[in-house]
Image (cartoon, rainbow, N blue to C red):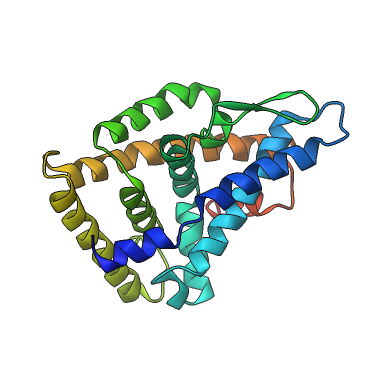
Length: 234
């Protein structure tokens, strides 16, 4: 494994991710008879986004960019990374499909990875199965996340050279890891890359759903989640 991937993996704190998730769910329903589950889902996604921004700002390559470039990259990739995070948590950290809240209500944890669109459930499952067949592991996950974040094709980036260099270094490290770590899986790297448009399709449909809910007054306002939804549509 390359030193780059080793550093990426060491920087992960998956236990904190789940701890924050379940802590928020319980705190929001403590002493409450019944809560709006869609509103609660939006609050969790908002927290996921804050964690994502915090991770990105402290991460390799990204932290050296100016704030304007950082925001453009995040606005372009946040939903893809969020769907990927939820796939990873389910595949590698046993995140369940649902949980019982403090007030006895059932909360659909899978809805978070679907960005609130139940009809995407089968699509999400199909992509997950493809990743499982490719023996998608934690090193693959974090490299793919960096590739989604460091996208040199995003319009308006000032320091495109730095983003391209970062993207290329991660791509090279992941390719080498796939070839040496999984020689039994033919063409693993390219097959992984071919899954990304399917991931993006789930994320885009989820974004559109949340944006329409927001426009119709059905989603919380003044949140980072809504700011991100609007930013891509300016």
